[in-house]
Length: 400
Length: 53
Image 1 (cartoon, rainbow over the protein chains, first blue to last red):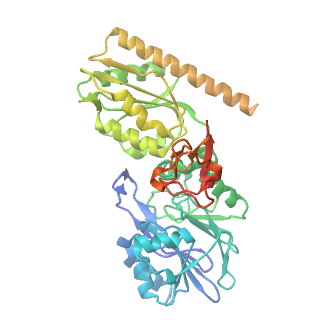
Image 2 (tube, each protein chain N blue to C red):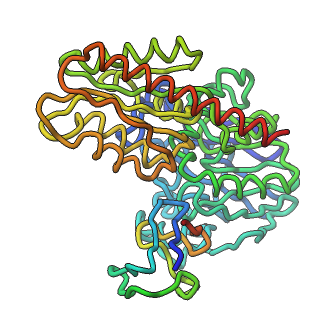
Image 3 (tube, each protein chain N blue to C red):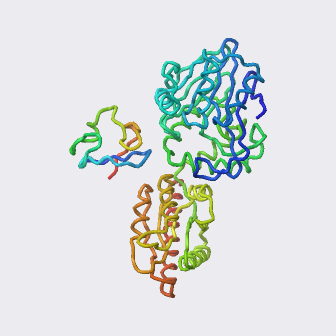
């Protein structure tokens, strides 16, 4: 990636990964990503803030050469995950005089994950500062956004917040700053759902610390930067809130058509009742899309047949991930069909136990759905409608 | 005695069960756990726990 100037003596020198299509061997990144790293040059000292995925360390070194860096005083590590800290061992070899700056938990993780010697690390606490000469770095410790050691770095004079994964997006773009937020918002939302959603309460605490400072630029470690921070702060305020929409997420898998028939029938029944519905065929869909939809969905209905004694493994996998992401979804249910037995409903409900959601009576039938079974789906749609109306009334009361 | 749930990973500390893996016997109130006690599942600090009914 080319070197770009953010403000005088502050450079973006990270790497763009145009072709990444699967992150952590788990979630799709249809538009690639970037590993952002930054250099802040003071009159006395120079700091590098974060590194890049080790696959791109050569690009990082080239960029350091391009801006004439022959020595580094500090390497600030906001987060020990390898896509940000992975090039650190090489940098420590190349710059023997450089000191790593990290919080205590991060020092521990850098030792364990990357074998970084403790004596190369200076531990900072929340609110500590380093003066580079006309450029002051303040460290904002933000645990559990999204690892225990996460931290942000604030460059006071320029009002730049190096926010690490917070406010990030998996998006490869040649634009340094967000120019078309409608395009970026979708990727930022996906990213929030995949990475930040389980830590909503910690994200809120971190946002409070951001609000206390004069932040003019937000520079996350993935995706483009914001020179209008309100764009991303406003949507984060909504995403971290308890508000859900009149929306049903319907992830499904079908083997012989019975469950697919039920999904199709329930989808229509919900539409007829004015409820937004988003079915996803789990055998074809991307988990990131599903995660993003959970952010808004008041209800999740998982649809699966029984395979041997339990849910189809693809449905169980989805339930496991949804449970781990802990969306603010208020209601869950299960629909589907079985041949001769099994414990599908119980297994799925147990798997989703991390959600603080009420279970609506499942419609789990034997064989191909008959008229009676379809009538039960109408009852389910009616129940969902009532539950959603109840939510809406409560939120109106709350705002009034 | 009240149960406490980890807001990070969802683990529930149940005084009636204790934390056998951490060598904590049943009957210890959440408030009486040491200040540096951490969640046995994710390592979150005590203040990340909230009381649940």
